[in-house]
Image (cartoon, rainbow, N blue to C red):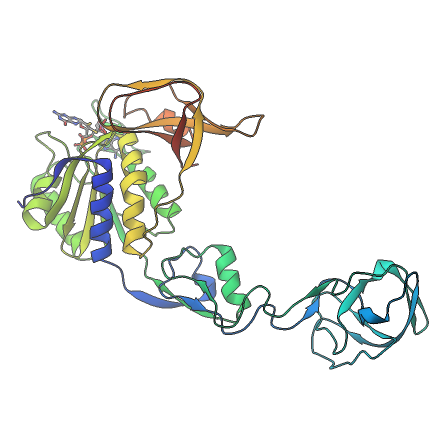
Amino acid sequence: MNEFPTGITFDEAVAIVREVAAAHRLEHETLPLSRTHGRVLATDVVAPLALPPFDNSAMDGFALRHADLRDGETRLRLTGEQFAGPDAALQVGEGECVRITTGAPMPAGADTVVIKENTRVEGDTVIVLAAPNAGANVRYSGEDVAVGDVVLHAGTRLTPARVSLAASLGLSSLRVARRPTVAVFSSGDELVEPGMALAPGQIYDSNRELLMGLLRAEGLEPTAWPRLPDDPRQVEIALRDAGCAFDLIVTCGAVSAGEKDHIPDVIGRFGKIHFWKVRMKPGMPVLFGSLDQARVLALPGNPVSVFATFLGLGRPLIDGLQGHDAARPVERAQLVSPLEKSHARREFIRAQVFCDEHGVLRADPNPAVGSHRLRAVSDSNALIVIPDGPQRLAAGTVVDVLRYA
Ligand SMILES: Nc1nc2c(c(=O)[nH]1)N[C@H]1C(S)=C(S)[C@@H](COP(=O)(O)OP(=O)(O)OC[C@H]3O[C@@H](n4cnc5c(N)ncnc54)[C@H](O)[C@@H]3O)O[C@H]1N2
Ligand code: MOO
């Protein structure tokens, strides 16, 4: 077994996760735009055209020359129509106007659009009832994006707005990071598939669904492997098998100090442990390692520990493997009730985060303690992050919150 850091702080653990992920970036692939949603962009996107591509009208009305407008009403000759679509190459001369719709190219000579509601039409004469300002209702070429602008940077996550920006530039595909393939293992002789009868001493496997759901929420397509029994040989065979076939292995349980906790031994003997045991609560026994071509995140079995370690360490790992290094935005909320701790570990406490009647974000800690109490996670929507070291936080203190629902 290699030498590895142990009993490290949560921040040190995140730094190691990021460093190892950066050294094992997944390769890039080119995908059609429709399949890039949620992916991490692999190369900068440089605008091949301006946005808007041409000067155009922001409103339905009439394109005219502002210099032709008088105080009070102005009569203009209607010489043509320009709808959104092919450019009819019209010209607006002195005393003339052209009917125009939103998004239609501005005819040459025109510099202003008067909205339809401020006009009256009599045959081929348009009477402008109220003069717009010079340049009113015109959207200029390049005012949003100039040719050559870097509009999206490598490492950016592709939100719907960013994919649609790429579409507006005429790009039909983008270069993105491949998504990690993930194998999920739950472990323990006490675990039974929901739907089966429970024998004395057994419990239902809840972590598998927790992990599958959390991973799917990251846009991944995890594969659930058969549950690992507390048998060292079987643990070894299954993990080594997954290590040569997946980018990421996520296990839960069998990582602590018990006689049946075989996972650290297998990772240590056949792979590398990057760290084991982090000063966090819950989740202290968490292990991060590598096995063959896979990164391994071995989470403690207590359901709430799974949750805290996945949000705190799993997310940066998944992001980092895809080249997304920026920490996710953390919200800040005022504590509804005081919180106190005497230990040095960073603590993650379930809470309901809500916006009060004054528009202030507040976090109401769930009174349940104990990392086995899944119901409190289900009743909550966020984890409050209590900093390292002893803390005495009065009601009203502003704390970081990690929202998960
Ligand atoms: N002597 C020590 N005992 C323990 C330590 C320690 O440092 N020294 N750490 C404690 C802490 S903290 C945690 S967290 C747990 C973690 O232990 P493991 O990761 O080895 O997990 P297990 O023992 O396998 O399981 C813990 C708990 O969670 C239940 N579990 C496991 N898997 C599932 C699942 N898929 N679905 C639902 N519930 C599951 C399991 O039955 C146990 O109750 O160790 C402490 N002990
Ligand atoms: O760290 Mo353990 O995860 O508290 O129960």
